[in-house]
Amino acid sequence: MDFINRHLPDKFYLQGDQRISLRTTIFREIVANLIIHREYTNAAPGSFIIYADRAETENANNPHGEGPIDPTNFAPFPKNPLIAKFFIQLGRVEELGSGILTASRLAKAYAGKGKAVFIEGKTFKTIIPLPDSKTISINDTINDTINDSMKERLNRVVQLLLEKPGLKVNELIQKLNVSERTAKRDLEKIRTLVEYRGSKKTGGYFLTDYMLSKLDKKQLK
Image 1 (cartoon, one colour):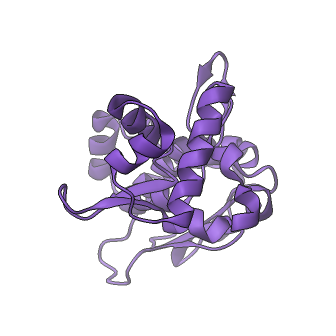
Image 2 (spheres, rainbow, N blue to C red; image 1 turned 45 degrees about the horizontal axis):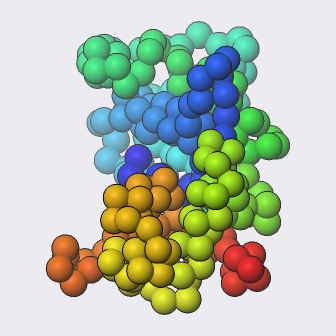
């Protein structure tokens, strides 16, 4: 999940009157399925690969069918019932089959297009569409949950780190003319865009690989 949070975008979404993270809600189920439904007698490694337009997982499987699964008409099969029960007790999944239902229900809202695909076979394959990289900007991540003045300041943080990677908190405080508490709070708001590298004494803040791959200097002007 840390890998997912670093390299995949999130977006503002309301479920009823409560904001949820589409990224976390969808991929928590996908990651849980990689563990719960794996065929552990098969030594083939599981995979989670992020492409420009989709994320794909593939895992060793003991199939109980063949081909794409219809989320509106399928019967979940407990391939590893003890592991499944353990994850339900942990609160990591709600019930058997919830991963397919949740991902199918939210995939289009997350990506703005397409649908989640689940393919049963000797390996179990999942395909989740991703938002179009051309539409991703700072303002897609720094979203409507914050006010305009804070949004402007967070844009400024990203601009500074693009121009001079590795800035320390005290340098950001000076350039932004804010308190240390405000600077740290701002950095927490954009943790998908910015990460701390190095030791406490010598390290600094950098744009994440995800952010650098999605943005160029023209987008930040």
